[in-house]
Image (cartoon, rainbow, N blue to C red; front, top):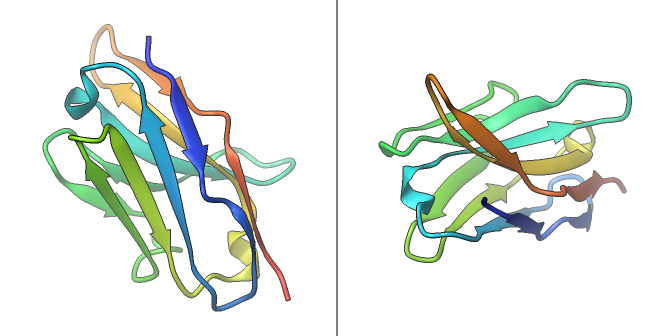
Length: 118
């Protein structure tokens, strides 16, 4: 069992920055593929960024060039640095840890609210 705890959300003005953190319990953190999703009311969760266990990082087109995902396996933590925030980035952001393939499974954090507004 893995517990994920997000932090760092809040209210920020357009053009501002926030850094989200997601801390994981357990000892197999480096084996997990880590994801940041976001969700607005009435919509499905949208994949924002992912960091695979092999070290590759990918971004959704809507955040590429503005968001940076990183991970520190020694601290069991992933980060999402969000720059040049826009009102459309307003959402609840969720951390997800997943093992891919047959028998794969995943875990979710409780989410952290990010609001971009003037």
